[in-house]
Length: 68
Image (cartoon, rainbow, N blue to C red; front, side):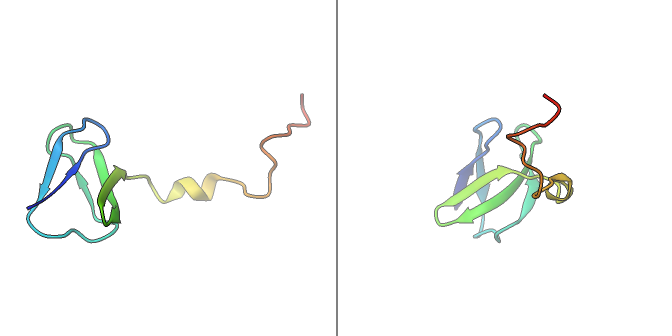
């Protein structure tokens, strides 16, 4: 059995077989939306919507704001 830790509640999550990279699921303990982000060692993180990166403006200099 393969186990990993939930990033939200730190509960043990058991897998009967090796999960695929990018596999998304809900934690059975806290219902957090989780994603497999690394396989060796198995690592989980919160699953984010793909739209997040689309909202980020890579050309804008977030460190310098001319309105200040």
